[in-house]
Length: 255
Image (cartoon, rainbow, N blue to C red; front, side):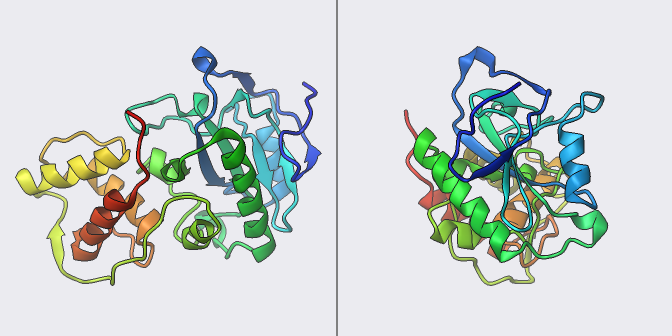
């Protein structure tokens, strides 16, 4: 499938066959950031463009040196998010633009993201946000929309820097404290209140009043994005403070 690049930052096209129309003709209203999690960029690009199971794709891939490759037109549905949920919607692929960032990930040493690569990600996201009017709190990590199943782009990803450049939602981190408030096995109204706050922000978490594995995964995903100094799935005082700050500062949502 041949198509013109959607962004002026695209340096090359590598069309993927793993593409289809967005369900209901939706326009994209969120960005999901991933890392490739493979040993080489070449291997990752080949996998995103191969027509065999598991069939995966994304809209953009950003190399370590900042080169941006487009694989799928923005108005089409790429297959990058998998089983995921945000704000009660489980078809994240139909409403998102997926950006894969070349990094071998946790299984292969998880190096820092190079400056040139992050600068390219920021420029690309700024362009997408401007054209699609994407809200700051809808620029998300793969781990946000798939807690427990995915951990990318991980705790090294510089969300604070992106926010300073007008990309994504962020507040200054609360000091990491050692005092636990809630943990796996706890039950009752304090757990329900915490689950309600995470769900209200967008995490796909049921309010059960039981601090189960799914709750731990959602807390860890929140920490990985907003409190990366310690990601352990324990709801401590600094995590609680961060969640309150994030909810208080989020952009106004349309009625």
